Length: 162
Image (cartoon, rainbow, N blue to C red; front, side, top):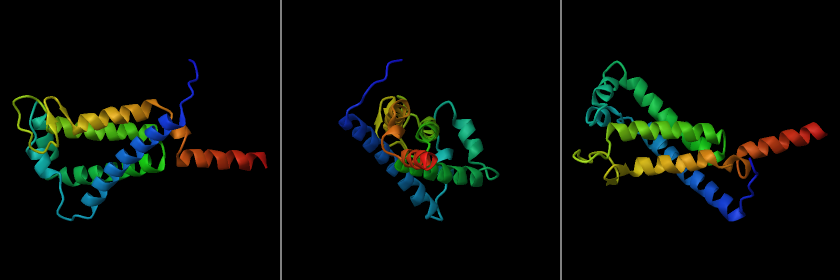
């Protein structure tokens, strides 16, 4: 495979995209963490589409505490990972999984009410758009340009040469 040199504009744009999506995840996680009344139960119970039974099961009294904790933790980990540049490819996949689960609970399918969906554009909504952006982040070398991983690698390599 041929090595491709990206321009600074291209790399800066990808980093900006990564940081903006990271901010979105981090913000959502912090808001949920500091709101003692927040729970995913209402979102799950009002789910629509072919996975409705699964989401109702997740909203059950025995699982909702675990689901709420995993949602907040997942949002925070993905947000911090993307913003700081730590394990970017892993957190891009994790973020895509979270968003796909959210999408499938309230899919933008014709005939279903948009309910909790933000921006329902006949099959496409904001969750799918952000998943596509995370796929771009996953596929391009955004961790090699501006991230904490780069700083740690530089520090490690300079310590080894001393």
